[in-house]
Image 1: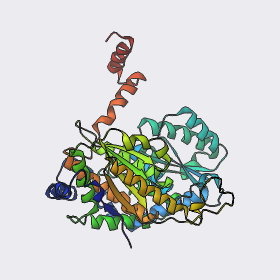
Image 2: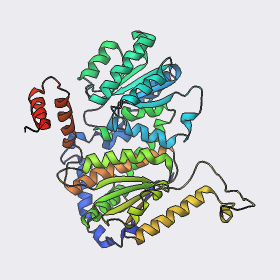
Image 3: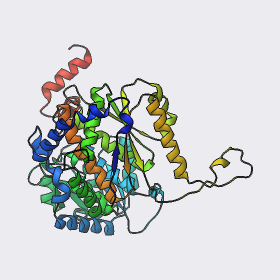
Length: 449
């Protein structure tokens, strides 16, 4: 089977091969730190061997649970935020028919998401959709008290219990949570929910290859065993130091660019199905590297769509950016541009060509234009959109993130800045235990502080 490929030759106008190669020893050391668990945050490295170490029995259990939900539900709501929803959303969107939401199909429940925002209209409209429908819930939270998913679960659990009764509702709720402690673990034990464990040593943004991502993906009808096989293949490839290690090459190239003043990385794709993959990537790298006043800012564009909005800035804006281009080698379907006798649109020169050929020439032309405009490009080639190749890509980015974060000099596995907004929000909402913070916030907002 082929593998994803990384090509960095289009960065050499900015950083030379010698500059990148000079980082070999540093990158190999950081790879060793990830694999041996000797660096900061080493208590969150459980993801490193997940593909090869996950028991077949667990995958069988996840598939059986998914099949049960598929049989009893028209909709399955996956409740979670951050890494507890982005990974599953990314994989499902990448593998799904682009118009699946508008097509009726028997035996395949729609996986929809909640708890990733606090939008009141979103929640009302979701509940309106589910009213009088057969639905189930996958609730994902280590603690069970994270505000956004906890609100969504409270509402949907209440709705489901009123609709089918507590006993039947318990059959349609699966909790993915801590093994022993937390509010959700306690509730799941009391109510008899089927549960899967979020391992203590797997952080949220690295959890897609755990039950957190695997159960929703399986419910959506995709092969989690193929996904894990692809990830395991990449685990083996990226365990070996050297220029044949794609994760090491990507990590050291982007760090060479960062040190040369390229502070923003734009992940560009030419396949609409990869939009949410880019969203997952942004969390992975933003939360891992953005700390201690450091970090490459992760941005993304969907091309050619965004060439008509962000294209001007990428081409001619401040030269502090580089692009990583996800290119898809093979499409699943073939559509030919027809001949039109009137040719009023002037497109007969494209007649007989596949749409994918047009798209790939747009991609190549754009890459050349951006490189000529001073934007270095890293190109990652994905052979096709399949479970195995998506599994490879997920693990590739995870492994490269660990290496890159250590090269940057930060702990890639914590997220201390995430708590700041929560403290302010709880103070403003007058949560018990935040009385001093509430008083200080009121003074600040009144202008007396």
